[in-house]
Amino acid sequence: MAQSALDERTRRELIALLPRFRRFAWGLTGGSLDDADDLVQAACERAIARIDQWEPGTRLDSWIFRIMQTIHIDQIRSEARHARHLQTVETVSEASFDGAREAENYLTLAAVRKAINTLSEEQRAVVMLVCVEGYSYKETSEILEVPIGTVTSRLTRARAVLQRRVGGMSGAVDAVPG
Image (cartoon, rainbow, N blue to C red; front, top):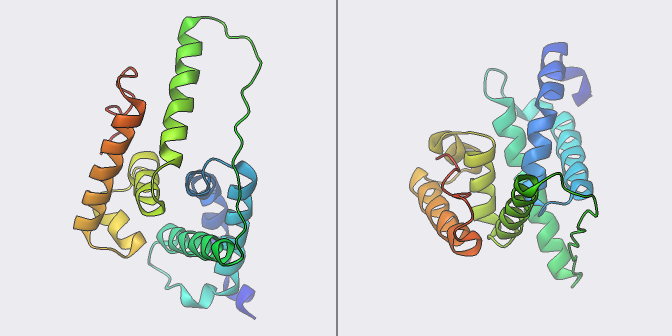
């Protein structure tokens, strides 16, 4: 049974990584928390079922990020084959803002989220790993199993798209590390 190979240390590491997996999944799924949670659950189930394929001593997070991306790509392909279209609907909170700065921050964040959702799957994955999760280009290259030059070019193109779409909003894109 594959689950017996999941020792206590690995189980604790997996649990500690869940918030990072959820952030990554949220970015891949276009900002849907429900879809992100489903993706994290599917990836964790697959990882636990196939824990014997993971080599102890290597990065568990990288392995599961790759599983998440593979599952997500498979879901997109399946939806395309069955001609199902998902539509993301963003609801605007009717909560009152406590000042101009909070309103501006909210609008900037909404614009950045919307712009990120327009990126290609490949660009979105790179942006989420490098800019949100803080992985180096090399680590991102290993996780996505693409050359480091591909990571660099995808990130450059993604930043250009974000800059065009978000425009002059308080340096929002310039603040993205890289």
